[in-house]
Length: 344
Ligand code: 13P
Ligand code: SF4
Image (cartoon, helix red, strand yellow):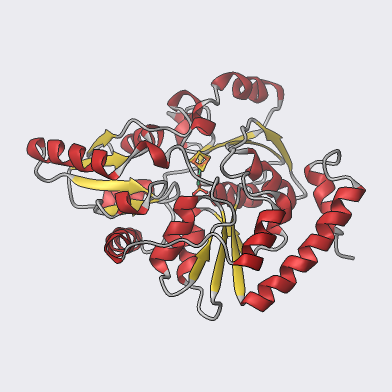
C-alpha cells in the first residue's frame, strides 16, 4: 500500500505536520494540481524547498538538474519555479519561449547579490591587465547580467570540471569564496582568484557539531556542500551538490549520514531515502523558504511573478551556460573518490 501524505510528512516533522495541517495541505495540493492543468504549467522545485511543495513538483533537483530540466520543457506554456530568483532567471535564459514564474519575489539570494555587474566589470578590467588570458567563471548563484559577463557558468556539481576544462590558466571565480577554494584544491595547476562573497547559510556552519557526531556515531558518513567553509569541508567524506548528496546516500552501504547544508535537504533525504537515518548539521535559508503553498496557488491563479530579461543579457547568459554544458557534457564532477577531501 502506498504511503499516505501524513505518514510521509510525519517522517520529516511529526510536530509541525499534525493531522489538521496535513488535511489543509492535501486540499490545497488538489487545487494546485487543477490550476497546473488549467494553466498548462510545470513546476520545478529546488531540493531545499518545503516538503509540501515537492508534492506538486514535476521535477526536483539541484541547480544543474533544474536548469537541464527547464531547457527540456516542451509542451507546457508556463514554468513555475520554486527556488530562488537566479534559478528562475536561468530557466528563462535556457527556455525563453516559456512564461517563467517565481511565486514570491522575496526568494532572492544574498550570495548572488554580492556580485553586481558594474563591480564585476571593474574587477575583470583590473585583472585582465595583469593576466591577459583571464577567464571568468560564474557560479550559477549570480544574476543573469553577471553571467552574461562571464566565459562560462558552473554549478556546485560541475565547478571543478568547468575550471579544469576551460583553456585559461588564470580564473576569476565569482561569487563564492568557499567554492572557489574547493575548486582551487582540486585544480592545483591553475590560479583561481576568488570573489569575496559567501553564502550566509553555509558560512555560519562550524566544525564543532560535526566533529562531535563523527566521534559519537561510528561509521557515519558526513556529506558537505562545497559552499561551506574550508575547516568544515575538511571533515567531509564527500563534498557534493544537493542532488549529489541524495545519490550518495542511496548508493552508500552506510546507514547513518550527516547532511551539512540547508535543512531542506535533510527533509528531502528523509522522504527519498526512508530506509536510512539522517542527522542534521543544517541551517535554514530564509530565501529558499520564502515560497509557501499559498504563493504557488496565487502564482498560478494570477500568473505572477513573471521573470523578464533583456535579450542582450539573456543571450550573454545563455552563451555562458551553454559553454558550461559544452565543457562538461552536462555531466557532474567526477572527483577522485568519496572521502578525498577528508583524506587530505
Ligand atoms: P545545489 O546546486 O547544490 O543544489 O546548490 C544550490 C544552492 O543554492 C546552494 O546554496
Ligand atoms: Fe543563496 Fe545560500 Fe540560500 Fe543557496 S542557501 S539560495 S546560496 S543564500
